[in-house]
Amino acid sequence: MDLDLSSEHQLLRSTIRDFMEKEVAPVIEEHEREHKFPVEVVRRLGEMGWLGIPIPEDEGGTGMDTLAYAIAVEEIGRVWGSLGLIVAAHTSLGCGPLHLAGTKEQKDRYLVPMASGQVIGAYGLTEPGAGSDAGGTRTTARLEGDEDGHSGEWVIDGGKRFITNAGQAGTYIITARTGSRDDGAAEISAFILPADTPGFRVVRIEDKLGLHASATGELAFDRCRTPAENLLGERGDGFRMFLKILEEEGPLAETEAAPGVRTTQPVVPQPDGQAAPAAIDNVLENIARANTEMGALYGLTEAMGSRLSGPRSSHRSRKQNSRSPTAGPWIATCASCQGGLSPYTGAMAWRCRSP
Image (cartoon, rainbow, N blue to C red; front, side, top):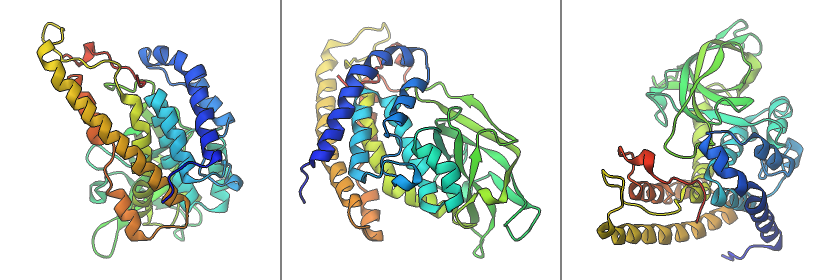
């Protein structure tokens, strides 16, 4: 496989890198320190077409391939991890389900504004007691009115947690239990929820260890009413839809956004706040190994992007891609070098940009 970037991809990479380093890097410190969502920066990304890179032009996007999207998130995340996370969650998890399963009317109303950068998107699957386990989903949706599903309203009750872009998104895609299947398993469906939907609110924003400019929050639904036409895809297909999105897009977005969580300087925390010189060599060895692994992972990610940009891969190849190593171990190593979630973490020099 030829992994050399085309001239178009090289131009995209250099353009985004130049923008991030010259115009975005100077404002990172302020936003991270004040836990402030980068509204103006995100608006600029939308104006340049970088919030809908893999989405077709007739759906509001740029119409570029998956490799171009991977390059964009990598270059954004390399300078600012929070921003890389915002873009990846919006594009893959917000726009992705609408592109995959939305009707023409749903795409025109919701996807076009999202892919063109006018509206930020978010995706709600995780709950306090459920995530990729569909059987654990406690959020429910019941249809009131016309039982044929073409009119009436869905009434949603429950909540979601650890939702990226919470409080900033204008459109949310969420899952809820709509009944039981013939085999007794939970029937999970997907819904489109505008931020101003009656009965829907963001109840809190998490105080995270890092990536402070990226909003992560908890959603609550209290007799939240949405039109029957806001069912996304077929009833009962919600969980399968999200698995497909996570399978194809999740590892790619996670890997490319990961560089921004690098720390500027390794430290070994001690109770007195000082670094222990004798342990520095071990820390540096761990970081060197992690960086080597990430270097290999970048190559794998670009190969995945090239493969996904071509003819649709088989179900088996997508499953193989989803089992490829992702950035989690690399991030865990960096966190452990900074004390992890120890009592000393608050004093650590967490900087959301690469050295």
